[in-house]
Length: 486
Ligand code: ADP
Image 1 (cartoon, protein in one colour):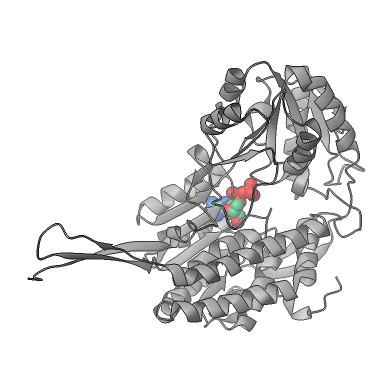
Image 2 (cartoon, protein in one colour; image 1 turned 180 degrees about the horizontal axis):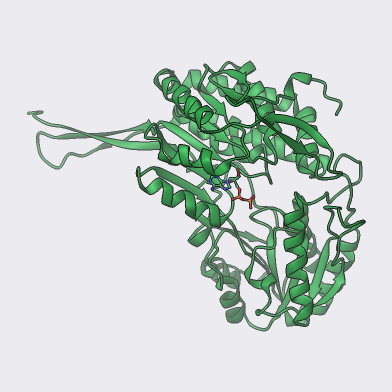
């Protein structure tokens, strides 16, 4: 790896403003998913390190919450600037540990940094209310205050942006944070810590605990009375465990969990735009995002034409090393993930599904590269219909009516992202209102932006990230009732 700023490759946990070895001294290896080479060895923290980080965050909270919003904003803005100045290095680190193509990695760094800029701006707009009193001598005022120490547990699919999306609003609100990044991608998190150090956050405001023992660290985070809020992005399975664990100390919780996004193409859609959108919504990050199109539903009048155009476009997607120019789809994250994709594809084939392109690994058996795949003749009894595929496989279902497709689209415990293409404006409103999802892309496959509220309903979680709503999850409303004012 040829970094311009070599300090960005940090391998020790970041606690109380210092890069620190774990108390046990143990380390774990971080692999490049493209070729399995070891990229770095990183501190393997455990219970004692996590307790230390929480303690540091708790002490720093007493200092940080008293900074004026303007002062917090200025430090956040420096952090944002540093992320942009180091975008090439940050993207390289991200691609090496995660596998996504460099261009996508750069996009993620910029997207991630945009939350820091946005919430730096929002810091000064944490307004309260004055409310007309309910009795003659009463005056009512509300203020908003930071919740306290925030624990953030983040996934490997966006190793940088899922951190800034939580940490930026938390810090802007006046909270301090302890972050546990995924064990598969700790380096992007530590690079952000190095830049935070340069930006001038007081020690303990940001802490990063790297570990292979997510369960033990998660238990400390969720049971500590010093932690007042948990923000988690990851699987619904783990989200449910953490939510239960948080119940004992009644923590405030935000969960951004799995999805099973429908991508609907109506007869009146512009098919070229729909194909373009489907490529973006399905194959970005090798299909490993929680908003990836999971089930494509195409109306019978355009089904054949869509399938032909879509399959041709999928065949052009270049699979390869994320670092290499021209690569559009990189390796998947780990063997387990590829095996899961293989299992859903063979289940589909066994039940009559037809592979139009892809359907296998590219190269030898140890390769984590799965070819971009299109499946036709798919039915609702297949696991591609009910499970979150999290890989580059697009099952294309045929439907007849609007009523039928709404039923199919909502037939899942998930409710994160959804997409549809059509032109009739009354239908657009009807469908957008009927979809039981937190987010709806209408004639677009790209919906993530700092300025809009990202989040789900049902088993996809609760809480919103980004937008003017994103700060609410890190604030408490306090109401003051002033009496005796005659
Ligand atoms: P994914 O399927 O995206 O890997 P996970 O839910 O397994 O989703 O992982 C998301 C994050 O949750 C990662 O940082 C992982 O280490 C962490 N994690 C996994 N299991 C637990 C657990 N029992 N307690 C706390 N964190 C966990």
